[in-house]
Amino acid sequence: MDIRGSICALATPFLANGALDLPAFGRLLDYQVDGGTQGVVVAGSTGESHLLEHDEFDRLLSFAVERIAGRVRVIAGTGEAATAKTIAVTRRAKALGADAALVVTPYYVRPTQEGLRRHFLEVAEQGGLPVLLYNVPGRTGCDLLPETVAQLRDHPAIIGLKEARSDHERILAIAELVRGDFVYLSGDDGSAATAMLAGAAGTISVVANLVPQAFRALCDVAIGGDRAVTAHCQAALEPLVRALDCAPNPIAVKAGLPFLGLGLGLPRLPLVELNDGPDRARLHQALSSLASLAPAAA
Image (cartoon, rainbow, N blue to C red; front, side, top):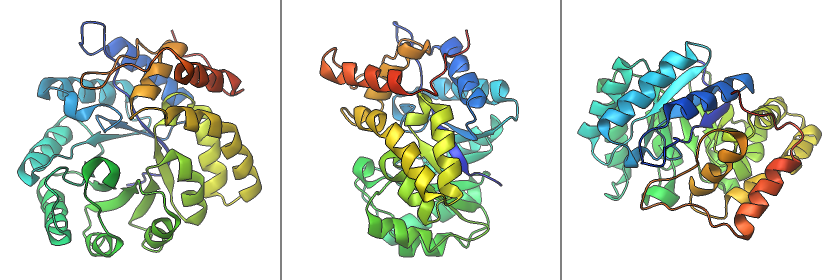
């Protein structure tokens, strides 16, 4: 399965009453495909996956599969704290038409490396979908080490890793594990260019929600190894990437959605809206400054 390039970790739009805003979600999906995004993640951490009800997950994913209609890959966030629950969600995602599963390391329970190895092997064996491992220690309190990844990549259903650690040592260690049937995807917008220049096949991005064209351009040149043009693209995106770091994801990226006509930008409790002060002003200034910004489809 070819999952690489610019992949958007989609935000989930909600109405003022807290219900899913599927019309806005449809506009966001179209905006991504029209902007050159090469894959989308539905109900990942940016999509507030753990704040969705079971039926909402099903409705969101089935809507995305139908709207995308095979134009790009649809990846479902299926990771749970328990292995059995993760397998169950992954099977549901398969039944709903997802192309692959993005499976985060179990959060809160803090498994050992052997526990992680066995967890991911069980999901790969029983979930029914190609699996992308997802390591984001800042959210889960659990770090999937490169030596464990090296063991897991031999399973034919484990097709890659989204690595959200941005330190240079980890980037280089994961890049060494890349091979034809196992891809490395960056999970951190700030270090994405560095990771792709080092050998990552793409990035699962938050900022791509707002600027898919600009992020696709960065991915193309970084994967192609053009360091000079990569530096230029990265510099253009840097103010927006910094602006999105002002609050826990997805608070800030959702604050940018109304600017593009992509919904109200409301998160669910315990997440709250971005303040109306300097942080929101910097976000809108960064969005306005990007020449590649295009309005969303009506």
